[in-house]
Length: 406
Image (cartoon, rainbow, N blue to C red; front, side):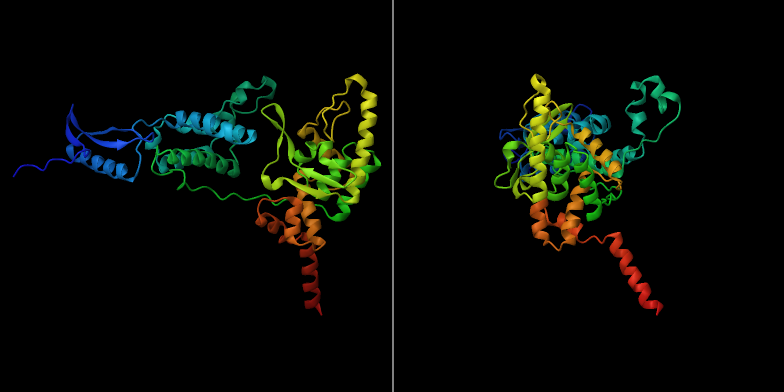
């Protein structure tokens, strides 16, 4: 009985060099039809690959030329992330790719990357001193070397959050490779990581916040307006530093939030806020309105004193010469003011938590607090609202102990 003829486009299996080869007609991601070949030592091995290739061809486009992980990440950063994401997002992803992903997985072919490869690689990162792995100690001045360059390891392993963020960057890249039909599944999805323990933020009581603001006002601190806006309206550090006088309506008592100041890769950027949910127009409480009017007077005095050295930027918060304030310098000034005011030190970001905590103490509805703080998700607001403070815990336990002692 004659062998059945293969259907048109079905492909074939044939001897090839020291083994066998087969091909299947497939549709490439660009829509063109071409042959894709598979190879093996035995006919049975090639037949299995051939059947699998047929199944892939039926499911959708099949890539005939697959790049390495490293070359794909270079394309992904340049063509997908840099033009379409925030500068800080691109800088973060680029750092993860350059320092961690490319050195560990860059030479592997994209379609041959397996979940076990990613799991082994991420486990190795989590237990490796990155000071040694990246040669950080060798570029330090001799009197500052403290690790492998002097014969001992400082054990600077990445935090669980950093490891999680690295995996997230790889997962995002591979998801795009999957969308471009270069791979059929994302091998980073099945990877297991250590649980990230989120730091519980600190916050001030109303007395501590008042003491902090009174200290800044008494010293005629030029950043008093920023401190008031952060604590009362929940502005982020970048939003406060990026505020312009065009965003402030002192007559109507309104404040429009839509820009922020960021330092990214040595460049100071005045750009859009974190998310669209961050944009808002808020009414200014009297304390903030008074602080901004005081700031306007301080600016006029500084401009007169600086003379020709003044640089007009239109920003509300500037140096004595009108130039933008560095975000890191603002954080340092905040910490210095904490010491002068005699209150426990918290970060500027924790001041937003203080704002939320004080709103909760005033029984402000969570939905209103969400609008004030401009959280993108309601769950973020509720996470703060549902936390019980140590003071309330102490009071509850005291009442319980009193009830049992009688």
